[in-house]
Image (cartoon, rainbow, N blue to C red; front, side):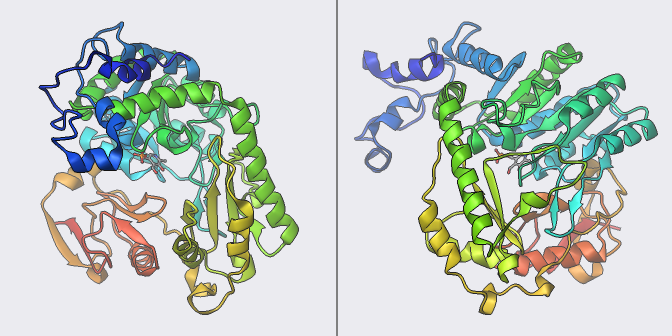
Length: 482
Ligand SMILES: Cc1ncc(COP(=O)(O)O)c(C=O)c1O
């Protein structure tokens, strides 16, 4: 099995090294007894510092070979292994686009970008023009943008230097990447796709194609999500497309300023192993596709709950990831967020909930215990806080107007005001309801009454959390000083 980096790391200890460098534990049980007892010796032995000949130094190193194999697996020209998540990949993408062509030329950005891309815009100074995604009003979730909307926005903004979209969505809705590529390339601009949730795409004929194979120029991949590597390991992938030469140098520079000088060998090895598992994973993926379909069938036959993706008839959605099962619990009179909390108290962990649904993920190779899960779900009655109430259905707010670039707003003098007094003021922060972590207010955007009400509502919901909030209840917010 060709896993060059993981293999080299496995053999690192063969020569009984005398470790006089970092990490300080030195894989020495006497030095860190708690660590060794907790994690096991093998993890410590394989946790080594970067810049070691025979591991990661030079073009012929095992790490370089592992990255080449990853490029081959996804059909990319080049892949960078990352140890700070797809969040780092998004910041790299934003920095690369920031340095591409003129600094003042706009980038079209899907408004429902993950907060890490917004953070990247603060770092890079990108001037965004937003592409509005389809909002599924019934369930309060954001999907993708349409090809027609992208074409219209490119015509309205002829100086656009790049386009950033998200596909698949948190809920597994897949956008028309091939259509975006055609429109972008005929306008002479590169397409960056945040496919954080699609690392597994293309590794089974029943899965959607991966954006790289559809011609996207740069792709953000959260390999630890559906790709099976360890948490926080990720990749950014560059296609062999028309902008590859320019983008490669920019991505490399952005990688250098965003990557730790102490990349975790454990995370890197996990990327190498996960890639190999995906390449040889068709059978295991088939089992998970069947398991997810089995859950959908049982739910449809039972009839008490619904399947959210059954109702997806939007032009912005061309496919659905079969490994995600979105269950409409409102149909049974239940509140999705309260259902998720109850399941968690029984050690069952769906990935996400909204007021109306919960979403179960079945990543490659997994065949969860459905009878136990369905028994728990089936026994929940709509009483007390578990009962759905129409007041729970607060819609996603329309974003406020962008008054300053995110970078300008973030670096401006700020003040903290009561949330009630913030309407009409310009936010200096990114505030995102979690999950899914899509900012509802951006630095530079005016707060609207709707946005404030939405964020306060989420903060007051059981399990609700607003990333970037000045205080947990969002009673105050930080704004650009007058
Ligand atoms: C669309 C999207 N992009 C990027 C990220 C960041 O990924 P990571 O958690 O690997 O940093 C996420 C995280 O959920 C996401 O949903």
